[in-house]
Amino acid sequence: MATRLRPSNKRCAVIGGSGFLGRHLVEKLLDRSYSVSVFDIRQSYELPGVTFHQGDLCDKQALLPALKDVSLVFHCASPAPASDDRGLFHKVNIQGTRTVIQACMEAGVQKLVLTSSASVVFEGTDIKNGREDLPYAKKPIDYYTETKIEQEKLVLEACDKEKGFLTVAIRPHGIFGPRDPQLVPILVDMARRGKMKFIIGDGTNLVDFTFVENVVHGHILAAERLRSDSPICGKPYHITNDEPIRFWDFMSEVLVGLGYAAPRYHLPYALVYGLAMLLWLLALILRPLVAFKPTFTPMRVALAGTHHYYSCERAKQDMGYKPVVSLKEGITRTVESYPHLRQGA
Ligand SMILES: NC(=O)c1ccc[n+]([C@@H]2O[C@H](COP(=O)([O-])OP(=O)(O)OC[C@H]3O[C@@H](n4cnc5c(N)ncnc54)[C@H](O)[C@@H]3O)[C@@H](O)[C@H]2O)c1
Ligand SMILES: CC(C)CCC[C@@H](C)[C@H]1CC[C@H]2C3=C(CC[C@]12C)[C@@]1(C)CC[C@H](O)[C@@](C)(C(=O)O)[C@@H]1CC3
Image 1 (tube, rainbow, N blue to C red):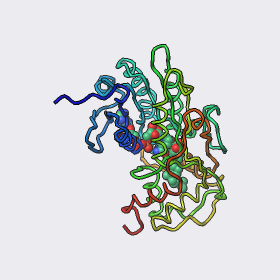
Image 2 (cartoon, rainbow, N blue to C red):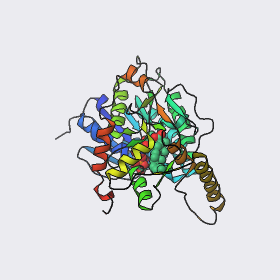
Image 3 (cartoon, helix red, strand yellow):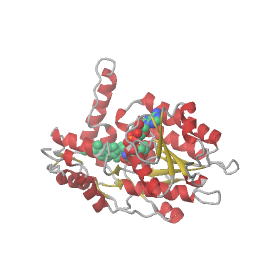
Image 4 (cartoon, helix red, strand yellow):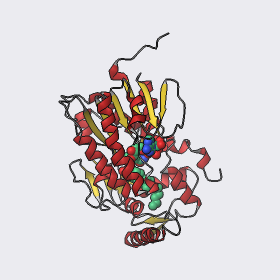
């Protein structure tokens, strides 16, 4: 029996759909009766109704089959920030994104929603209620952010109403939630290694952490409002929980929720940042001889010791965005989703 084709505007592809954000996005799109194809370099799950295409997004011929009869593409693939692999970031986030844009145009895709990052404007100094018109960081702190800036520029510049190819960039910050691979697991690993006894700085710095379902909600809102007469074409949008929280209160709530002690002793921010820079340089110099990855990178220390929270007023105004899960509920659901990371597990 022929499968009933959904209207073209309900046929989408999620590039990076095997990842943390990607899988939550796929699940919500299925709930909203989209037909979904996933393109990813790895397959991390199976879901009824999802067509998986395995390949490297840098390979256009691998990409094109996943974009057949698709009108909407979500691009949420990226190498893991912790890899700190400059060449890989450049290959995937810059050259690969060019390939994604070319493939979308060749395949007749009408809408491309990019998952960017609020940190494209972050240079390691305080940002309080930052708006989207802040300039891109001239000195990004790490290679990941350096390539996320170029990636966002490529996608927003590709927006062309005449050609019927509309793009928008979503800038989440500090995504957390069930199945997150890089925040809670790394935090717990540090706690288990006795590295979470200290608070970097005075502990009062406010930051955004965004529950993953709110990020998904923002992506789908943008996709469904992306039309040639919409104000969102070719623009970036912060999507946050709209509840800035003290960085160290968030860390403590997650750690205590999982049975670990909260950080207690303060260390001067400048001292820790200077040490992190020294360690980074040492790792760079010794890389040909020995590969080691410092836990306290300059980016992580900067994120831990400065204010960095962003206004999502533009998303509220242009897309009617508001968070669907509160920070408190998000933290509770996240802690409950990691029984294997509990102290003593
Ligand atoms: N996690 C956060 O806090 C956060 C915050 C802001 C923005 N982002 C952005 O959100 C997106 C998703 O992040 P995540 O946390 O889900 O990461 P993730 O690592 O869980 O998912 C990324 C996915 O991309 C895939 N991928 C990587 N290279 C690929 C390639 N060459 N070809 C095909 N697939 C490839 C990976 O296999 C993975 O499944 C990324 O673009 C990231 O920059 C993440
Ligand atoms: C106390 C330690 C120094 C920090 C321990 C927790 C740490 C592993 C996370 C705290 C903030 C997180 C974060 C990202 C990764 C994990 C943390 C550093 C992030 C760099 C992931 C990529 C995103 O694009 C990001 C830059 C963003 O804008 O959301 C993230 C910023 C926060």
